[in-house]
Length: 228
Image (cartoon, rainbow, N blue to C red; front, side, top):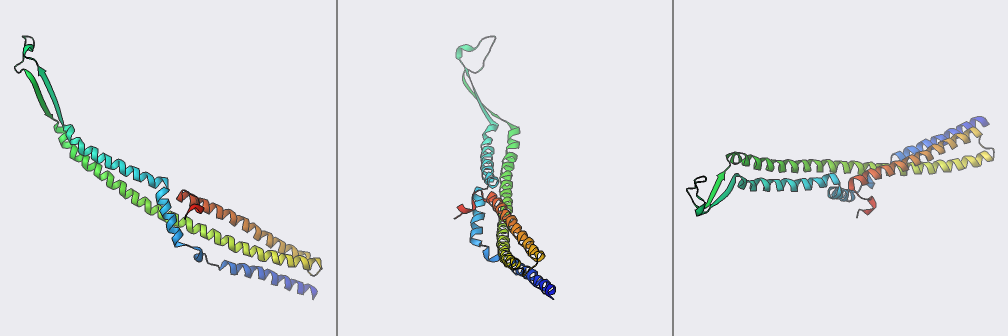
């Protein structure tokens, strides 16, 4: 009868651990989600994330290329002048006209290609802006993903920490009863193993939180604590 009671008591203790963990697992991460903070994270990423910032400079270059293509209309014209003094006419170098002579030349090839080059420069600006918009959408989605993952890992850490505290309290009770010979070593050892497992889960969750935080900070290009 004594052995049966101890087995039953052990089963109750194990069930307590399982049920406690189950209750903690039902905790929601949604209350920890801050849309205000998320909005600040997105704005910060758009402002400082290097790859998105490069699009601003590419747009500046594209606009300068449009100006260059538009000013290139003058390249199709070339001007020249010739000065022939009145006394420069010789039998070897005869000259009908004397004095200053001006010449204007029109490059037909440039006249044909310049509209095409201007249109191409404008299209490149449109493409660059569309690429910027596309990457901005991807950036927003990625910031949200990493922020939610960070909140998820923090919630799991809190749950596992509470489970470890419950397991520690149970372990202390079992240790007290074992020292008074009210529990077997086998029962005490199993509770110790369960407690160590939960402590190990806490350490794993702590690392997961730090990793998730680092990934999030990579997107916003600054420390999370610096966001105001």
